[in-house]
Image (cartoon, rainbow, N blue to C red; front, top):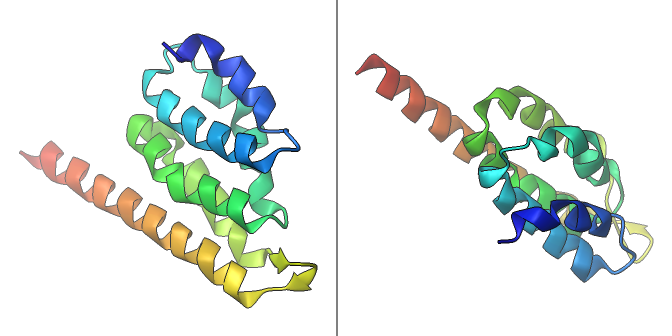
Length: 130
């Protein structure tokens, strides 16, 4: 029911209202499972661009939900891992100050997502052996 509004949600990724942006990030990921027209591949770079930004919550939402995309479309796994690993070089801020705590939050989401990706790959390999 929501998939026809994919392009509307993509516009919300650039919203000044962070709550709308974060909702769009999560909704787009969840729509990826039914993305029969491969819209996500077209917006991949735009979707992941905020990971390199300074907004911790935005990056955490993107990184923390990335495993869902890889699960639905394994061919994107390598690109997704590359995007997740970019957080290593980003210095997130809180109220204008560098914040190691913010970096730790994003790293935690990255670890969870990478763990899910690794488990998914192991399960798929094991199933291929059967």
